[in-house]
Image (cartoon, rainbow, N blue to C red):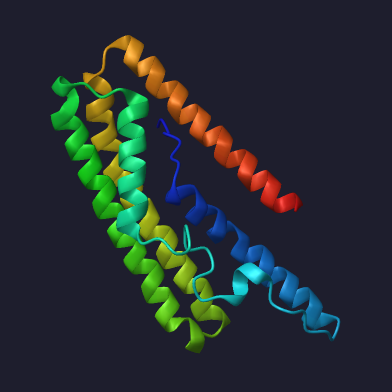
Length: 173
């Protein structure tokens, strides 16, 4: 199976999901010592882990679609495949935004188990969205000439590296 690195909201959501068990373990460790740590800043908000605070899903995805269209140098002949891929991106963003909003609405009354279950649901939703996105991108990628495929490879690699650097910086700082 070939994985395609994603940029934008998806890696941010994954990173937020991966942080939850560590934060929970930290709280359990403190409880065993008889202390109650203050909640980490990222966990204090019901929208913790929600990508790009202050922007809605439509704004985020439209910006990303325009950026990728230019970076990948989509030709008129590739527009049908591009439009299919962009539509899946829009649907995915809308659906993931809804999942984050639903979590935010339920957050104030969640117990710890429900909190973990909500992370599980978001991770499952994200996996479903990626499963829809990959075939749409594959059609676009297959329509590209080899030189443009190499460009796409570079664009996705650079975006993944940029995300990894941001993640590493946020862990240090």
